[in-house]
Length: 270
Ligand code: C2E
Ligand code: CA
Ligand code: CA
Ligand code: CA
Image 1 (tube, helix red, strand yellow):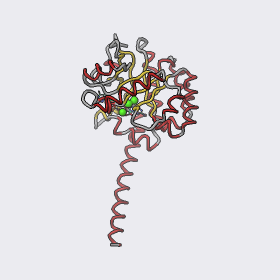
Image 2 (spheres, protein in one colour):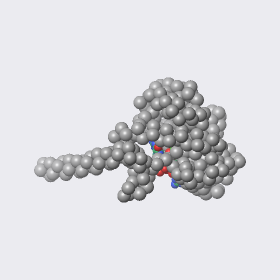
Image 3 (cartoon, helix red, strand yellow):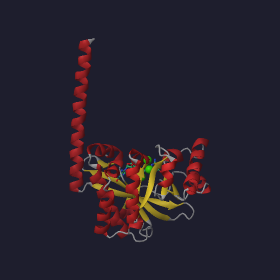
Image 4 (cartoon, protein in one colour):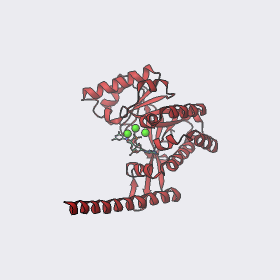
């Protein structure tokens, strides 16, 4: 049994080494991708459910890999977070998004994802201020999407940072709302503008009464706190109609448009 234990250990060690070698390689490739300009920002429309108008967009990063094609963020964001590259990546997306805001004067806003790792470093306000100054973008048209976990790691520091960001004029939203553990007491004092209902609750909306109840209560909660509510991952007209009836303000999903490069956006919408 002893030698078997040792064998298992040796096997594990080999596995780990192989895994960390792959991770290091991917990390290096991603750093190079940033330098070589292989990263792309796609924009997905955000719709006012009442009027049906495009009012904003969410910036979503992709990696245009020379051999692998367009790599979705799910395949490299977690690694970038682990290896610390995410802050560089997120600030790059921020800058691209601010430039796009200037190119699209008729679009209401662009929302950018902020990794909890960058958020928890606490100097995000300084970086955002620099990017706004460099690009000349209107801070009121920039929205930062943060997750509940970023806030709950160190709630006091998070609140502090959120207030400083608000002083710059940018707006804040809570992404994937309902999938984390944010306390309602905290939510009440947080200077956010918007809650984004996670798509896991939207997909079952038309046939799952629990999902419907959750969506309804998030909308009611958000509105009672004076926040806008957005539903993500809307794919079917019935979902959009139900959400509109529930009073949900904004929607996003394949029904309205997939994430696309800025050049493919209809010029009238921007
Ligand atoms: P997220 O922030 O929740 O973004 C929404 C995801 O849902 C996007 O996936 C989007 O393409 C997808 N989506 C939109 N509408 C629909 C729909 O109708 N149906 C379905 N099934 N999916 C829909 P994507 O682009 O693959 O991004 C995945 C996640 O990667 C994002 O989830 C976000 O957490 C992260 N991410 C993307 N870009 C960035 C970035 O620049 N920085 C950071 N830190 N994270 C990013
Ligand atoms: Ca998001
Ligand atoms: Ca989301
Ligand atoms: Ca999500």
